[in-house]
Image (cartoon, rainbow, N blue to C red):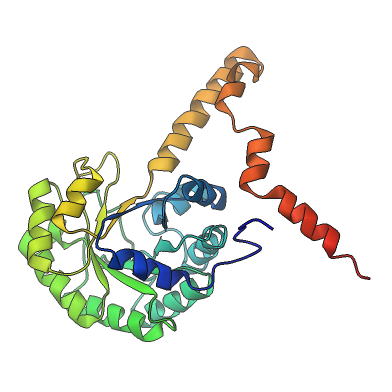
Length: 298
């Protein structure tokens, strides 16, 4: 039987994620908005996968990224993605879907669904996309309570708790550094400074925070396009590309539908498609077929 995650799940993916971080190199982590995309991330040779709240909201329900999805909905969708691959998966948990007690349950849900870590942000409810204006944040103490609740709730000590701060856009760079240090003291394993705007800001943040760091290399936002090597040089441990695959998918599907509408046949776009054979290989169709034959009662 091939190494099919849904049939032969990896034993301790949170530990694997910790080991990747311990190498001291920046880990590139593409976003997957559904389970088959996660399999493509794994096949491409990446070592971890990210699950974006925007990707789930946009892709599953066509909602904007303003906190419309519930904790149950997000955990269920993230679970499908996490279980589809043997890669450790980190998921967006927005602001924990409530107060500290709600964060406690959110961490329990995410762990049960097979996630290896999550990030919590310090925005008020309802939250906004981190690269939009008009954000508002909770107090440092309130966020520290959420982080402490997350740490108390996890069963596996390797489950990664990442604290995201949106404070740079609200209160400035120095305030973001101050919050980062407070969040680490409260029990966060890593800090995610959202929407920094220059390479110098990323570098300076790493110098002053002096803790494990995650960078968000999203498209069409406030952050300039920086190569992985720069983030590694600055001292970042994880670099996520949350919506790259999603945006490519949207453009590709839109172009294919336009071609189909114009030509009245899909024959002209067959070369843009994954074949039936390629799909079956990626999802290990034959392994399921073989398993089915062995399940007959003797």
